[in-house]
Amino acid sequence: MVKKEIRVAVVGLGNCASSLIQGLYYYRNSKKEEFVPGLMHVNFGGYYIEDIKIVAAFDVNSNKIGKDIGEAIYESPNNTAIFAKVPKTGVKVQKGPVLDGVNKYTAEVVPVNQKQKAVDVVKILKDSGAEIVINYLPVGSQKATEFYAQCAIDAGCGFVNCIPVFIASDPKWAKKFEKAGLPVIGDDIKAQVGATITHRTLVNLFLDRGMKIERTYQLNTGGNTDFLNMLERERLSSKKISKTESVKSMIEARGQTIDDDNIHIGPSDYVPWQKDNKICFLRIESKHFGDVPMNLELRLSVEDSPNSAGVAIDSIRCMKLALNNKLKGPIIEPAAFFQKRPPKQFEDRIARQMVEDYIEKYRLVG
Ligand SMILES: NC(=O)c1ccc[n+]([C@@H]2O[C@H](COP(=O)([O-])OP(=O)(O)OC[C@H]3O[C@@H](n4cnc5c(N)ncnc54)[C@H](O)[C@@H]3O)[C@@H](O)[C@H]2O)c1
Image 1: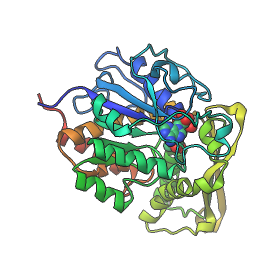
Image 2: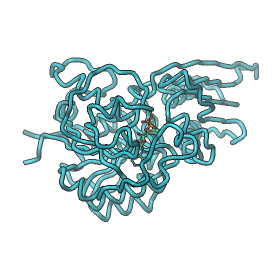
Image 3: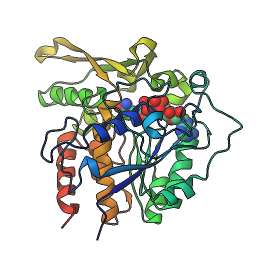
């Protein structure tokens, strides 16, 4: 008999974790068949939002450590929209090892008490009964992500990797999870209606209408810690690969090519007053019949963190189905639909159907 509860540990109590945890409370009492924006289904293979329970949380910011997660998610420098008041939950934020989680830019706003010792993460995962670890570390946290991925393996947890450090899509890590008999979903979560999915959809529109993508860019600005962190360009290489591949793969799947010089996708600047509002400027250049030039310009404005929280809730529920059914290694279907850098790219309409089939196959019975 599989358990109905989904016990989740969160790594990195930043803006994304705040939106996820607020959402768990905001929709806790929603009616069973009520529409919830941002979710694929309210009833996802037999699981509802109310089944998700946060049982452990790790961070390094001394404003957050030792506080209940119901308080810590509102602490500075978190600055995403507050749409729910989360009560005290009884779960306190614990200190993980810092490793490469903080850089010269974020150190200005993320106070770290160097004297405070990190906890034994594996022990806490085991003691809390966590079955899933969700990773929300800053971009470029290669060592820290690998550390928590290994902790998930050692504690017997599935791993949902929302960031562009390659775990599910890295054959070495994929093999480690497979060998441990544990599932992994990643990498780099795709927001509900964000820059990546909008760009992919528009590229497909051009291709469907018999147009060639001659040149394209996607420039993004924001004022949250994620954008502050990404001012350090050296941390960005995997983010650029993840975001660029996500669009380039759509073009190549349709038999077209685009030179690296003609596609530019990535975070562009940090504008503090934007807070968690992300603005995406997108341009596609093409030619009509007769080689007559045309172009499209789009400006998208979203609150960055709530935009991916529903996708995280669906990913967590996919992970629970994977655990119930003893699936191991990278879980291809949810990764293809919910992540920018899955082990294998599929067109979004196909990926969505793959997730529907996955739910049908592995849904909770009884
Ligand atoms: N917003 C979206 O839709 C979206 C989409 C794709 C990917 N992501 C990725 O999700 C991640 C989280 O985004 P965010 O906006 O919440 O960022 P954030 O900077 O607000 O949160 C990161 C948190 O990690 C903590 N941290 C740093 N080092 C740590 C360590 N070693 N151990 C534990 N905690 C540590 C920080 O103190 C902070 O609380 C980023 O990598 C971002 O790129 C977000």
